Length: 196
Image (cartoon, rainbow, N blue to C red):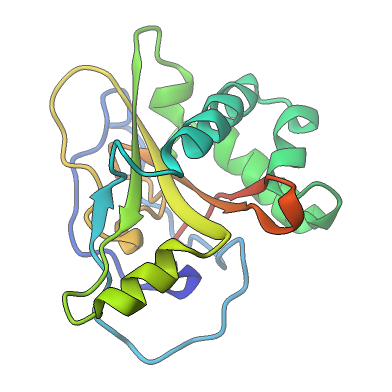
């Protein structure tokens, strides 16, 4: 699924309030996570994580921990959730820069005095998957979801594919991918914040 995050975005959204003076960047640079290029494929559509999903409470709890850490701006709080000792110095600097960039997707959220909305998305399985394939995927001890936040207020269109959860400057929302594992009976999760 990480490869889907590198695909081109399909739609443009209006800049968030307060960002009108932000000129488009000349160059965004490399993705925070290096990914080998792959042949283009149709992006898998996102769908809100079902209320009855056995993973929902876990992803909600992870998001409840991650958002205050990101909002604090304190790398000592968010870095352990983004990989801890496995988070390279370059990636740490890139996330810190994203969180302090007044024109970035996170800027209006971090400055919001009102409520911040949250949505948790999973990937829709293709209709061609058999019941056996669906059962096998449901039984796996790991799962991924996208958590997106937006400043409260006007209705907005949330990302439709992972490619649109890219934290591009003109997005009206900001997102993180959370990978959760229940292997060896020890629940663990790690978040990834990517930008294009």
